[in-house]
Image (tube, rainbow over all chains, first blue to last red):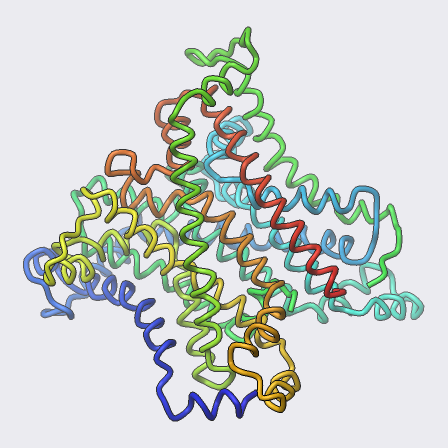
Length: 274
Length: 291
């Protein structure tokens, strides 16, 4: 395969990829470009790159706690959600991948239906539920709400990876006298480490990008950065430069995470089913 | 793999059940409860006609129009993203530094918060300060996504293609990576055409992951809210008011709890039905491959 495709495409430039990447990067470049300009320049002149480079927009965000606390809040609830989702999904995925039990198939599909539930349907009931138990405007409320779609996804991904581990390994371990918890942590977990990483990555991703629920469930103390942005747009009469800088800063955590998992991305996106 | 029957496995599933019961069953029951009651000034009154809200909605054009727009949107983006994603995946470098670079750059749009995606395209499409809008305007195309319904639609579809095609491409790429070299060598010996290689080797191997891609893209596009809300706010008029936008307007804007709850339930049922079909096809595909 290597020589068949490579010999044909190597001498030429890969135009398809080049055009596609250009299409992906242009809007992001434009955002970065705007974040480095002053408002006067954004509205006054049209230029492909900043004429007088300024970092003032970033300074504004990084020195104002109502801005940067948004990032801190987002990262807190995203981390909580990721840990919680993966922790409860691990044993469940093991059960689905190894055993038949009463109602297992129905249960699995029912779990998946929660991934299909539109957040818009749940926004109001969530608001009332978390208000009534006194969790409104806390990080844990958003983390719990996001388990709605992240737990089913984590179970789905982990089940795919676990199916790839031969059952003989379990049986050998039990014969060797391992108890279930010890086997699970010592032997099984290392075998599906990449699966756990991929599941965590997806939980991080979907919790990080979600806005509707996190905005509905918070007001001040746990307000995510995404919600901070929407408020500022409507309130301060469109401060384009700061808005663009805030947008660029929301891309950074995602970019870092991608960089760390880049070798697992392809397999991970197939949810372990390749 | 042969699975053994073991009812004790329920204990392993228990944590998930408790968590999901709290975060899904209770809210869902609240919705069902609202859908058969009348909310007035914070008090709830049982309806005489239990299904009044459902009946009203079914007779009203509002939900049907939103559903039609939603169906057109989802169908359009699936029709573009799936073939385009496969096409891109076929052209991705197989290994090396360049492959890593492609993977990282392609994943980038997937990790951008959805309202920032909206903001990016809101800015990008503006005729005064956005590169796209400005360029189109400069070459003489009359483009304004806040006024013209067609422009708004095109903008949203291009935005979604920008946002999610990478997901399809990465899934398809994962499928391609799993094809052993021997298959390609055999095809070469048989002097198979490029099309035949795609049709009889690559496509069958990709079917499993492509079904996942279709399922995920269908579900997510059917629930799309944040991006169109930021870019067009559902406008101009109601041209881009999709189901979720309409629902949030009804529930949080007008606080019509009863009708909104009835709307929610029907909305959820439509997604469930279609997803169930995709899911069944997917499971059967898995079985046939003996996985």
